[in-house]
Image (tube, rainbow, N blue to C red; front, side, top):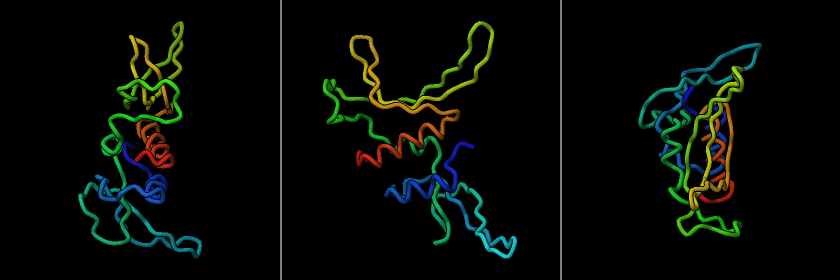
Length: 145
């Protein structure tokens, strides 16, 4: 899945992310009655505008990357490079001596200084959407976006 889950989407909205920045919507398709309880059913749709107030926006990796600032200048960093820290999504395959340890995705804000990468903030996850989602949550919680 390359888009936010229903729960992730609700969290982003709760943190104040503009729903107009979404490139998909969970369309409300009905009510499920199970064990006497009613739960809404949502289905992810690639539509530009929501069709009802019951629909919930969701974001792809690309849409979340577009939301991120090109550079950040954190006040708590002692030696900020004048060009700031830039975002990047990196895929790393882990293996050693013929053993496969899987793939990780790193979403990070880094700055290159004389060939050295300085990492300011980083999230490692097993899928790109999880890594990018965590960075956007951090950016929203810290009022950077």
